[in-house]
Amino acid sequence: MKLTTVESSMIHAVGYDPDTQTLEVVFNSGKAFQYYDVPPEVYEELMSAKSKGHYMRNFIIDVYEWAPLKKRRH
Image (cartoon, rainbow, N blue to C red; front, side):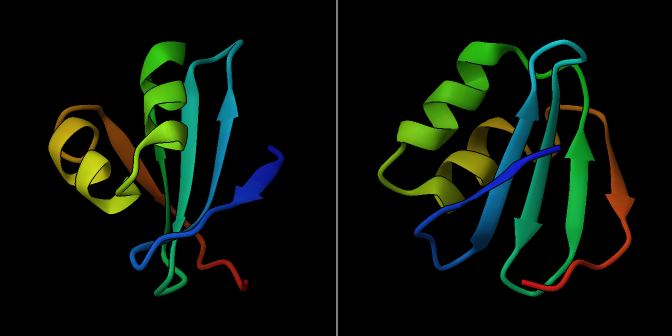
């Protein structure tokens, strides 16, 4: 999955696969997670949000099923 680096104090990069509706998020800590069954509009709202960390905490984390990935280097 292609990741896009974002400006955020919490998130380093974000990727999205519209075919599987899988969102991948790499946090500044290096921890990475995939979130499943995320609609395209949620991904678009995340990418356009002024505060991506705030959006993640309120609309994605603990809302969508997720799994940790191996730690990624930035």
